[in-house]
Amino acid sequence: MSADLTARLMNLADATVSHHVAQLAEAGLILTRKDGHHRLHRAHTAALDLNLADVVRGAVSAPTPDDPYRDRVLRAFLQGGRLTTLPAQRKKKDVILHEPVTLFEHGRHYPEAEVNAVLGDVYAEVSTLRREMIGLGVLKRERGVYWRPAPRTHPPPERSSDSLTAAGRPPVPLHWTHMPRPVIPPQQVHRLREQQYAAHLSLSLLSTAVHTALLWLALSGDRQNVVSLTGAALLSVFLVATVLSRRVPLRLLTAGVAYLLPLWLTAQVIVVGMHGSDIPPAFFLSLGVIALLTLAWLPLNQAVALLLPLTGFMLAATLLFNPQDLPLMIYTAFLVALMILIALHGQLVSTERARNLSVQHVAQLDPLTGTLNRQAGWDTLETATRSPLQAARVAVALVDIDHFTQINERLRHRAADQVLREVATLLVNLTDRDVSVTRWNGDRFLLILPDVGVAAAHDVADRIVRAARNLHLPDLNGVPVSVGLAFAAETEHLDALIDLTVQRLHRAQEGGGNRWA
Image (cartoon, rainbow, N blue to C red; front, side):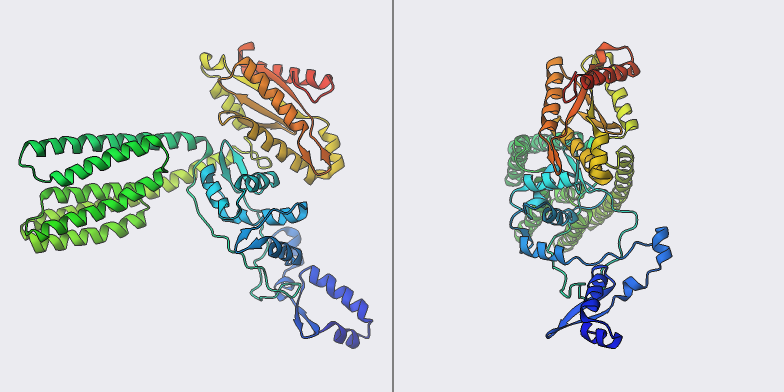
């Protein structure tokens, strides 16, 4: 029904009806569409069916209207699913930054290289986009690992199936691609990566030694399979050099080898069959080795998709060229099936273990800033000072935001929370990967600096004060902080270490703040 018809039926002025229709549309209670020169309105039944008592109790979320402003911003700055540029106006920038975060799953953690790869498909200046998303709080970072914060407890109801928005326009189509990533707790990322490189290097060296020895024995004996062994030895040497260079990602390297080996075995069997020879028993052993490597290096579904046709091909070739080896082939196929079942079981166990580790990690975080909570920070400090030799080079810095009460009163609660998040992000970005950042209490953060000298610790404290002084936020020209710095070697136990840090923090504040002591 149009507004002018509604006005005539209700005997009201057109301006009065138009005003209230606009208010209802803004609240998401009616939907609007154009019909020639008229705008037709109808009730948004999905929103009107909500029970007010349920909304108040929190059983359901209040209706969230479609946002014409958001649609306009996305149309202006998105072309073909990519950002043309980041808007300078803060309100528009907030709209834009909430879109690429949908590429990341809640509860999953991403190494920086993978975050760069995802954001690189969205915007050319990856570092700028990543920094802005962290500053807004839609993306969290700790020790070089990123994650998307958990969603709200009661998400808003899904968009109505009606293609009309409250403003009478279809929603803006976005072309973001959802890219799941494995769950890896941040404290294990670096160690796991180094273990992966060590394992692949050991395997490449072992393969080089084995194939070189087999090639030497073949050259010394009947000279059979010399060409195949030479190729395998050269491939092993290439793998050693590639792993040592670290220029090729392990995932790409292992996937390439895993796809290449089945093709190599298939070609060898075809060549043998064309010469009218029997399939050597070593080829059945090669099938088992290829199955092991493929299941270890590829996702399970891809590995099975490779192994089943390869096993079927080997079975057919055995029946065709040397049926006397059929029992050996059947047993080899049984071993391949057994490997697949073991890999499936291992995947289930690994998934459950990763889920448990992820839950443990989330339980250690402060929900507002994404840094460690107090208990996790205390445990980290105990671990860092457990050995007297390690404790001798551990420093602790307590960072306090000067006049935070006034900031809270001036900016209100939500904006003050954003200040805490910005300071936490600043502390994480300024320090090395080994430094632990903890929200100690209120507006105080505790930094644990392991294996650090006096001069280096002083430099960290000085950089924190200077960087916070230059941290420009809306309605704030810098965020002054005071820092108290102490060393574990100065005290006999941790409580005394924390007390000493607090005393030096108070000394810095008594000197006017915006300094370290």
